[in-house]
Image (cartoon, rainbow, N blue to C red; front, side, top):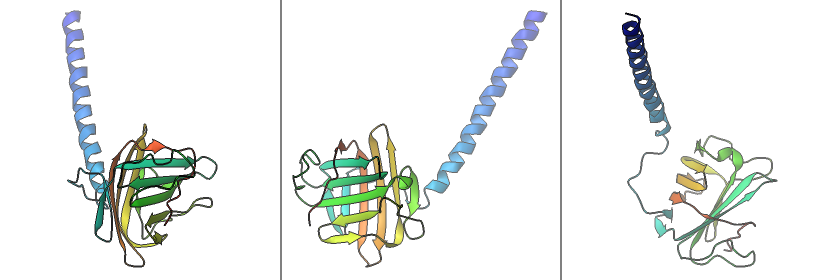
Length: 182
C-alpha cells in the first residue's frame, strides 16, 4: 500500500510541475508582447542600413568598446572590407557609424524621450556628411550576447532625416575607435 501512495504522490508532483511550467510559459509570452510596441517585427532578413530612403546592404561590420568611457562605436559598410583592423585606414564604401553609451545596450530605447548620452559617451549616428545627436521620433534596440549583435533602428532626427538599421551578426572587434571620414 505504501508503494502505491508513493507512486501517486510522484504522479501528482509531476502533474503539478508540468502545469506550473505551462502557466509560467503563458505569463512569459505575455510579457514579450509589450517589447514589440516600439519596433515591430521585421520580415527583412538582409542586414542593411538606410539613410533618407537610400538603402545599403551591410557587407562589413566592426565595433570598438571603450572600457574607460563605457561606450560602443559600431560601424557598417556596404563593401567588403577589413573595418577596424588598422587605425589609420579609412573605411571603404558608404559607411554608417553608431556611437552608443553602455546604458543603451540590451534594451529598447525611445529616441525622442529617453536620455541618449552619458557623462562620458554621446549617442550619435553618421552617414556621409550627416551627423545627428537628437531625434524627433523613433526607437532603437541593441542587443549584444556572446558576440552576437542584433540592432534595429527606425528613427527620424530633428532635421527630418530618416534612419534605419537592421543587423544581426558578429562584427569584427577593433581595438581602436573607427573613424568614418566624411
